[in-house]
Length: 77
Image (cartoon, rainbow, N blue to C red):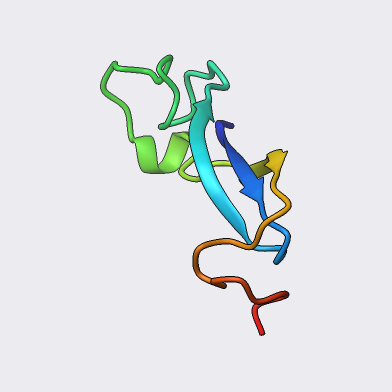
């Protein structure tokens, strides 16, 4: 099944901000999210995967300042 990779920036307050998201295509005919999904007539709700796998997160950058939501506080307090 397809899934999303979510790239984050992590701040010193430990909050994470999404920078980018992308779908990783499983290339399966029986996955409704895939570009390879079967375009012939079929009962998709019965024969095809209707959910993606869990999102996979990756921290791409750590920043030594708090996020804009925290405004200079630490750990959200």
